[in-house]
Length: 158
Image 1 (spheres, helix red, strand yellow):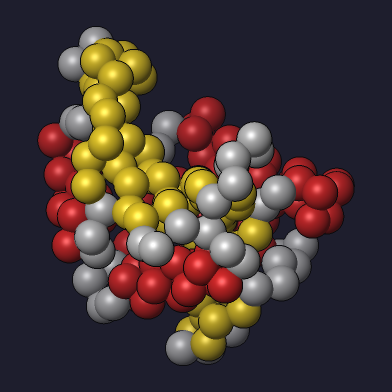
Image 2 (cartoon, helix red, strand yellow):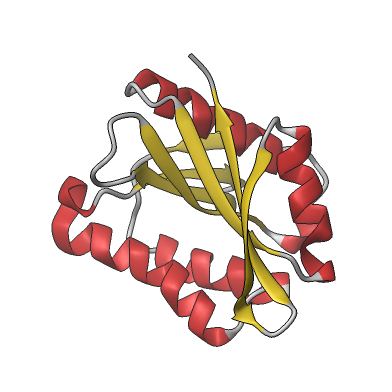
């Protein structure tokens, strides 16, 4: 597996495929995920978005999108982390998360925030973050829909 940080135009289709095939995201959410790459290509670093791509045999099998939170000094958002369905459970997500956190630390970040859903479908996602050292910081009731809270988690270091 190789990791790269520079997006290419072909990554748009890869992101769309990974998000769609996951079964977690509706079409609007998939479009939001893809739109962050589009914004990066429109405005470059000014977009505030950075990416890491995991590749095997020239195929994108996972990615992260992250960036500093505007108006903060040391806080970052992990906007997306996703792994191809056929490669889940192989450690790619953990490796991408660790490398993303290392890059954030290298740029002076001290906190990383992630958002996820409270639906049962997302229980493995919440456990993934918990095992990686993230703590639930807030829960916004019925944020996404009835019986679907927004769960905000954070990891910090000094």
